[in-house]
Length: 400
Figure 1 (cartoon, rainbow, N blue to C red):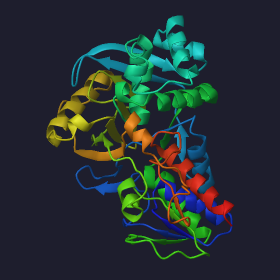
Figure 2: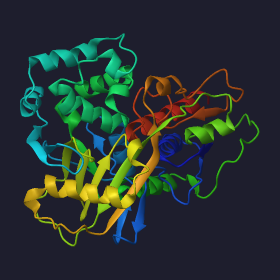
Figure 3: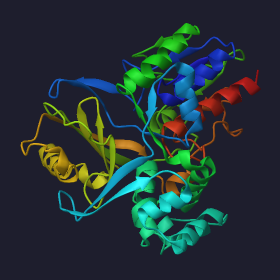
Figure 4: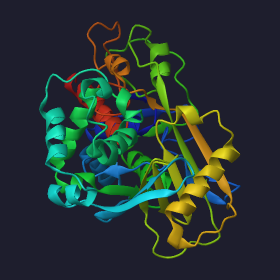
């Protein structure tokens, strides 16, 4: 059994296949496993950093179960976390509130939402025929307080796209999953000690204990000839999968994410671990392991801006949003990480191009696809990657 690609999808596929008793070889182009979930040592900050702050939700059962199975460490954050509204990038505060992730009534009250907001949201959730961009399918929803305070930040974070351009059907499916998950579905889970220590290293160790052979720095340049005794899982980025299987459709467009990591000499006690920001450059401010990080989704317009300008704007927002922390005006050591092709673009055009794991029209029935860009019905997140890997493994096992 051959699995090409040791990102989250490939690791999830290899785990299911190995636990089913198959002999698995795992190939990876990079020197290490993890794909876009990776950690690296940064000499500027003197810390080991994640390329981005990858957050899990309580409504991500496949990803949380994968973490448990490999012995990983993601910690659930408290049910109350602060949110700040700014009047523009690097600007001033226009409002503060605490989001209470308890009952739906508590959540709505903490956000100042009313019955009209709930009815507008229910209309999106219950409409099985919703189609097209969200801004066209539900033109008034994003302008409501619900849209500004909850829906837009949630869509930006999960789908990595301007909410108005997001595929409305995918947004509705995501919201239904959150609703069915109950109050804990909105709870945030952060990697303890970074992505490598909390997820990738434990996954690799578990696979090796199961006898999986991992070959880093080993790209799959061409598909091997068909072998009736071997199946192949292609858990590669869409362009690489298309190069090996030119007849498949793959999403072409992508969306960027900006992450900026700051390393102050010391941080005051009592700082929030996660703070949601609206109206500024940052979408979230995270505090973990002595590092302050900002994450900005749907950041295509920021990719060409100089790193020093982005870092200065981000530090100004952190100091404004965490005013009580007494952070210095002088910017500490900083690392700007621009992920220009962080995810596929979740607009209707991109969604239409997502292939399933198996397609009977392909000339290679021994090949199964995996990756967060395949047709999982989920956004291109860790949850989507794990689900895709598990579905690919299930397709392989059905053929044995």
